[in-house]
Image (cartoon, rainbow, N blue to C red):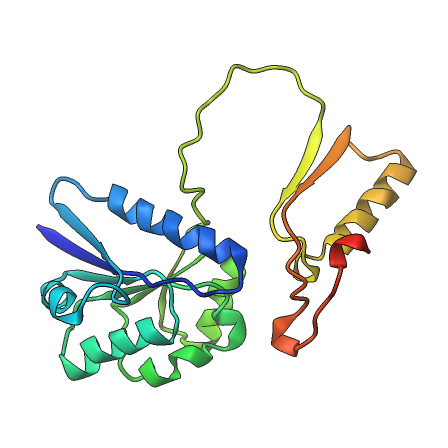
Length: 216
């Protein structure tokens, strides 16, 4: 029997997308259970340490669904203080682009048996610049919901954007490019639909914000 313990957390991220991605990720791990694989999903923010630590000590795989300061402190506790050698799997969201700064305290405790999972190849490559020997995987974000096929019906050719209405998504350049294509007569769609809400975050890494971005 392979025991997998997934450590999640109470999300306080300002990114709306992450607040949707992590619950979907937890669901995917639960669905992986079966046969000779047992999966437990635990939130140490809620479950007392004396309950989940025995599971961690006996786990064959330890999964960290969201790498905030709390979950990384749990990883350090397990690896450095308690000597847990089970491979760790970290689901990461843009940490490679930030130079892996949040993992500095763990850098001497990691091994090539540990795995880092990214949603994009670019983030994985950036991580390799910090940890060249790291074992990485690229797994696109899960929708978290089963998609039910519908009978085919002819529809207008629609180009859809779904996500944050944010300067980080470069939507202004996207719309400008569509205008150029339409002017040239090479736009291959009948309409464009945009779904999402504005966060006005701008570029948090540089400290700049973009108020009323959706109106520009």
